[in-house]
Image (tube, rainbow, N blue to C red; front, side, top):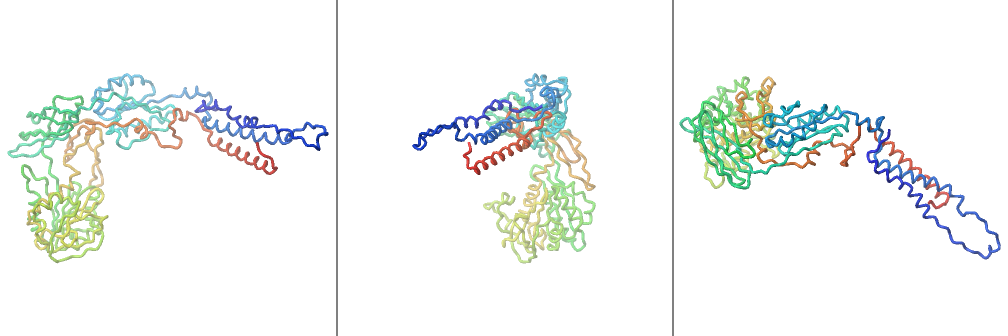
Length: 640
């Protein structure tokens, strides 16, 4: 059976007779002309062009048929299953329901419940997206079976697989969501072609919200903790809140006056609790209670483990003692009011095969690069590519160590030569992280100590960045990104034979700033927003990576090995940004040539369009008209 997607266009079919109408209207009878020589001849009733009339009829019919075919193709003809629309209507229809359980929709499920009840039938599947059902008025108690998904991409992928079993015109995706940009910001899967998307939107409340942004614990004196909480007011009016802290049986309060669209910090000094879990609340709560409470680890962040590789060869024993004397105290020095941020693991180069690089935040090669075998340097390269940090300082053979680092792909390409000409450090290049530590107006001995022995490597701008340079413009400190990590390479040593850098006041802050800047993206207390998949752990030396044992469905505190984890409310929930329906629909629908924005333009079940046969027939009609026109011109007849 033949059906049409746009049957209303068939009412224009009489326009196909336009060529015939134009022919009839254009017929004219020539006026009679009297000639003197024919005045006495009898009249003969013979039409002037009557013998040519039969040659115009096929041309007019072709033109009428051409217009008719164009109208039929515009109406969208397709072959339908036997029984017409009744057979299509008899096919089962699938409804996939996605309920957004993010905190921004807390308290609004009551508005959506009647719409959910209207969809309950035998061909409906339900997915709960985001947090636990207990945070969304417990929809599992409504009598339906819910599938749970951590995020929208996973839920849409599962719903699309379930809808694929139904006919293209019998698929419907129902979205119960507020279209928040924080939920729809990632790359989403596509629903099957022909799926109808229906939005069920709750009323969006006015944003007058106060939230806890961050809570951190710092070690203070006499075994106490200093707990600081950053809070923000997203509203347009000042807000008065009380911060209530509970940890280890202790309760403390602090009043906060939050300026409009501004921040304020609450600080507490408490005894270090035996129970390291803490809770901070803002009272009174507002219309968005999910970000008025924060669970946090009430203890300082564990120090970052650093591997310190020192040369253990007999010829370098004096160098190792000197580096250990200056570098290790600088890294373990306690800052004012706190403990050292680093936990050092010194070892000799002979112990490298037994080292667990994946457990280290950074690896420092102090005069030991020239003593490491190639296989250990390749292991270090894999460690850096996976996100580690390597800091290398030359030893007694700086050129040999540089070439070994180049062979392993850790140092930038290019020629390098060794220089014994005394020099010093020049101005800090633009873009260096040390520029904010040593501004030009502040007096510092960073540029006063002598450098007696150094390397002069050729560093391409696209391969690495120069963070420090000598007075001659040669690189003194090079940063080379590699995979997810980076290499920090000094071209002069920290021992007396190479330079006096280790005995300056700039030594400790320079070393600390470089390490802290390289470790900023990997905090020791990992914060994961609710609903977000936990980060994949790095594989161990055996190549295996065990999956995380904690869940991100709701806020909580976890310990994964030596890693502390805080599952926190999604930051974007405090001040949501909404997407238009057209944007969300564009992200969900597959981009295919057959897609159209006209309503009702989707193909029906069991249909086969006539686009290819119609185009072939149209081509034949145009070819026939061209041949007839050529025939007319050959005979010298004017075509109608």
